[in-house]
Length: 377
Ligand SMILES: *Cc1c(COP(=O)(O)O)cnc(C)c1O
Image (tube, rainbow, N blue to C red):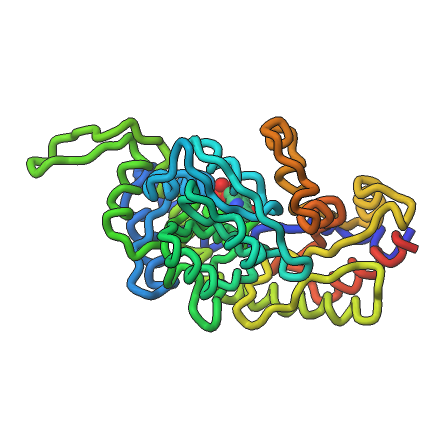
């Protein structure tokens, strides 16, 4: 075997939870206040301070729940269309379908893996209500022209910023500006609250609406009596999760700096190697949620699952983020054709995610790249 065989398996990602945050969670358990309480309020305040821009921030149990309520609050429903990139996690499109609207897929750029702005303009119809850009792997979408298009056509923008907590666009933090910006704190993301999500917005009415959407549609009248204004969801964040998020947020900038250093190490190790298509380098605002490369598997006489098995034999975990959404069974059944967005279709076939997380050692990147070169031959 290789130099990797004697070392522990390197997963493609792993959260960094320290003893301090485990102790802080134990304290929450001892307090007896496990569901939404003071820690949720503290987490929301800390997130608002972190993203800046005087934003309202509300947390919920996942980005998926957040994206869905953002669409509802934006008034998106039956008969409406929402423009979304064809390569993202399926949740980006699923939430559009779940509110009764139709996802309209646009293609992505081969390097940034973000939606192509010109295609957004071309996809607008009288039914378009919103655009959902996805900041893939933490590299910001080119938001100025996107918001200009949205303004020209009176469209809402729901940013899927699941990968982009701590990212910036032209020096401005994602979430510090814009319409409705949704983050994820799933354990695979740059920071975690076990499961969790947050919405940042300047819209105070929307923020008040999110409090109702995430908790049964409940509102209280002036006397403090409970009323229900609509059948809301049950997606309020527990205090245990919020405490994890509070501790993670303190470490986020350090995590992201480490991710960036590791990503740059990948570029060094891959210099001059032409069997993989590398992602765009971006700038300081890139938070490097993932390092994904494209490989023409048939040209190397193997399938992607075979490649993953060979890498696993070298002790290295490899992920797939993401298949082209229109290629998935549900979307095919709705009449979508992945070849209508050829770059997304290609990325969906060729992409693999290499290990990238803050606790990786300095020699892990060279080890991954040596294994990949050995496997591709
Ligand atoms: C992870 C992810 C989501 C969903 O986040 P959850 O918090 O797991 O619901 C949505 N969109 C993208 C692009 C993601 O990567």
